[in-house]
Length: 296
Length: 296
Image (tube, rainbow over all chains, first blue to last red; front, side):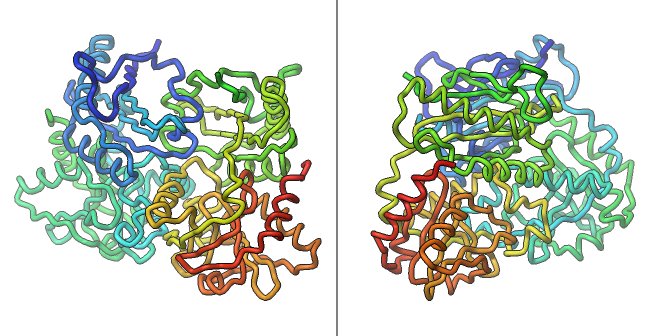
């Protein structure tokens, strides 16, 4: 029996008519996407994945802002923020009414250019139970892989869509398969000119000399919604934090490393390319407790 | 009223049971794709577009080989060649039985990693009328745009999937929008180290000093099924042909240029970055006549 809740966003952009919420419940088990939707034929759309803890969607505002930013990079119409916001809440409410209140859930937002020739976008949200990341929150091994692009490509060549969370994620998936082939759990991408960028579905946190850093987002990487909360956690504990260009060498020389993302939260890195890094288990546990206790 | 024919490939990999063709007619107007199909959530799949002239799918064998090659680059299961082959023919026959025999059609093949967690891939084929490319076969203007990647990236970093015809095509679409913003019709991608690569949906043909050349496919570009036929056309007319690395400067210094692809066939380039190139209208017309008269 299906537990997931699916909503079709019937008015993904613009304003719904009076009394129309702009979304409607749909059958998760049924096909919902036309084969000529550019989301499937061209990976032409954007998405967000939002963690839902005890019924609270985490960083909903920042996620919706990032959806709008990705849409702008792809020249998609501005998403109807209010509609998507209410749809997330409605999806969560429906899921919990059928499946109970517990557990870690996620809400996935998908916004595409729509059926070819139709001239209007498509949108869906689904809410489901998250994977169990308990083990990954204790430690993961990663490999550094070439992202192929220079660190400044978002500025010089915006059509490469660096920094957009687009549906064209085949390379991210291929990089994760390459990591698995090398016996690792995940990836940190390095720019072709030697800067640490991000993971395929995460941001990198680097602790060195008592300062907590993450790669600056002008390098065509996603502004992390969880990374912002991680900085708040460390700042409250007296650490300095900094956005900066970080070279692959600085990454390697770090005292400690984490990959952070919306649903997995903080995964401490035990190995980077086979080199061992110490994990402060107590600090990481506290960090994850903090991240999982957010109510917004 | 819908004219297009849609088939679901029910056995996209492996062997169908005795008496099962491995595909079935589906409703083109209905949704066919689950929202959790990795083809939509991650652009995780491959495709081919095949021109159909007078009922003949052009270069069907090479297209199916390329589909298998792309699948291999994405670690997808080997597509069931016989099933896809018969499905293309069945789709064309169905379309023609309902819409008459005329016109230029295309068959689009989509092969994805499937619904997340299902563990088997999805496949579809649809057959529809092609766009009218009469005007583009007389002349197009193009701009050269940075592809961001080095020319040797397929060798050094295979996880970047250069040379795979994947569903993650958002960058190709963004490049075409950038061309439109610059008042041009199409794009030739240049590698970050200065080599001419390909168009977002086409191969480049370069005529210089009486020799017809196209960029070598070890640079992470697609082996062109139409480009092969274009070489055959020129060879029959006494031209030497050559696969080679072609620098952006050599591209600019060409005597004549074409973009060639399966459905549009040969489009002569009238302008590259605003610089004018002479079009041999008679030769191009002959070339398109040749391409459009292929029966296999």
